[in-house]
Length: 255
Image (tube, rainbow, N blue to C red; front, side, top):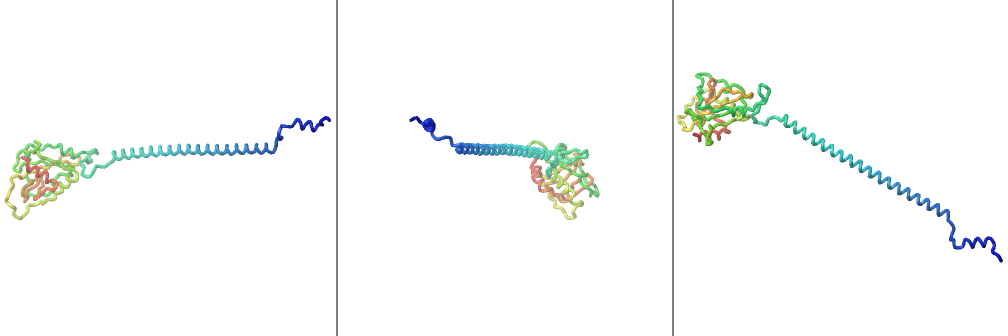
């Protein structure tokens, strides 16, 4: 008996396995699409983060660079301003001259040479209550001589014993001399005299650097009624300030 049509078709399909499952194919396609969508989303998110970090880092670096640059610029400006406009330290010998230029009064005083012999500055016969210094003082050079007169006393270095005061010390010296008594004391003075008494001559310069008339005084001696004078004004019983002790001791030891 010959096979019929259905038997022939079954024989042809034998061994082919199950047929294509359309639902499974469609589900698989949806699954692949979902995987691709998740992957693309993750990649995009990473790109955004990396970009943000790059931009943020660039901004941070740029900001840091700008801050450092600004800070450096301010520091330079501050240093420049400070150097250009910093006032002289207290006690400095630099002052403003009449011409408007800064004058180093200490250097002006130091440039004064001690005369080869003690200047003879006699006190006035009467009166003499005016100022010992003819104007404001910026600095003072002090030269030391034997009380009896003659050449300057010479120090260990072979040069005349002298010193320069400026700023607050010069101001205090002038105040102490002008503040001494304008009249002799009426009390009897001791008669003793030391052998190493010294005559000091004060060469003052004004704030504009010009010289003022010299003033003389005696130290390392009984000060009773000894005059300090510029020839026009006079003071008595002056005692030098303590900051001159070392200088006076050097002058006394010199020959």
